[in-house]
Length: 579
Ligand code: PEP
Ligand code: MG
Image 1 (cartoon, protein in one colour):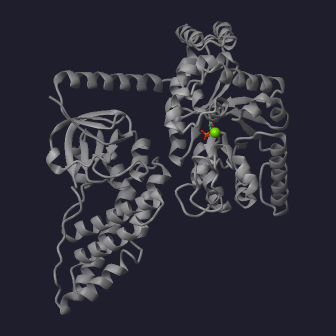
Image 2 (image 1 turned 60 degrees about the vertical axis):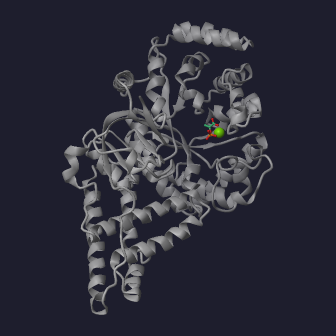
Image 3 (image 1 turned 45 degrees about the horizontal axis):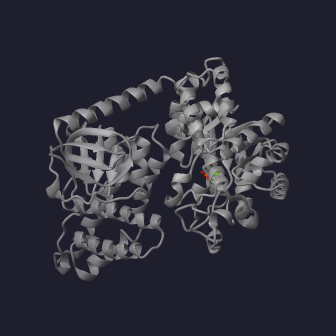
């Protein structure tokens, strides 16, 4: 017998435990008429609830350990700020006075009015801000009704090892529940874009959202299995299933702790070749994950993530502050900030990039092409990156270069910006390394041209494969053709590595291929010494490096490169990985 509830797995891992149900749905409130002479008392009751909510949030903020990411604290600060917002504080007071209704009802009415405004918004990110309004309103209503919130400290014992099932969880509640030792959580609502989802991933909590479960389907104390990777919650299962999940869980834990032991060890092959292992990051919290995994720095900082999910464009100062905060978190480790790679699948909500509708976005105004067209967008970023270089080991990397003319244009623009900063007496590192991404076959075939003028190259295999094999990387229908082992792809990679060696320019790889341990030996044998990989795969790659003997790899890798039979290449790869 088995029963399963499905949802969106937003954070991988297996959790086995008892259900602890919290906070089902909205708080039930009813309208009550307030006599005229008691209206001001009701207003005072509302103000007291706002003060209590503020104290609760401040207490949560103070209980967060110091090493928690800045983003988590930001979430709570956002809620504190919302408690100052007239839409949530002054407007309900108006309603209490006008309608002579109870505070709970005034809050509900104001919440419904705001929800309608949010629902009409096109931007999915802004729509998720509706959740923040809900969280604040629910907190206030619970205080007014004299109910506790489910993150009260006395819940500690019940929560240790529990799988929390809730209608929704705020980011603040998620942090607290994590500190209270929960094993994972399942929420009825929510999506992968929400702050709570981002948090679950960075906290390593197995989690599923968007399950649309009803209270009848699940009870306090039910023994359940949460499979975050598959996005399922098993509510009924037999002994064999439980044993199998326990085995998988043990295996995952064993693997993680084995790998953790590698964190502070340098990435060196058995015969002493030193490899540099850096991390790719999109969000600030990934920087902490990168450090936890022992990354030697950030080899790809996808700066465009700063521009997404918002309706305005971050200016020079905002960008500078973001870069400086990452530099600070890195404590002296190097970072390569990639300039904006917007366009194609990465949309920015604001003008000007969204005004252009390309008939074929991946081949259109994307990345450096878009930046060169819109200097107003590009210059502030160049200035911010250069200014950040005064405070740390910062490099700049240009995506999607394809021609000498384009490269010259970028380099001239960077020189102009440097002169500008110099005139304004703003500090920057004149020798900040500038590199280019090799993502277009034309650039790989003429890599020498780029190597001569740049300080380093980085191979972006995600796009290099897309453009070499003419397959849209976001189109499901052609995913089956996406093949890092295609002889054309391997030869292009080898050409770039060789061009770098000829010109004495370091070559790294930051595409997903670099983070896939199945390809580590192949890339080592091709002469790649610098890898930039997602933090979650860094230790797996290091593990392979530690077990590799360069002298053994080279002949097999040469065989692979000289072969154009896909089956033979796959066979040789198996041999390579089993050596
Ligand atoms: C790549 O193309 O390999 C790369 C690292 O860039 P992105 O995935 O951001 O396009
Ligand atoms: Mg790319």
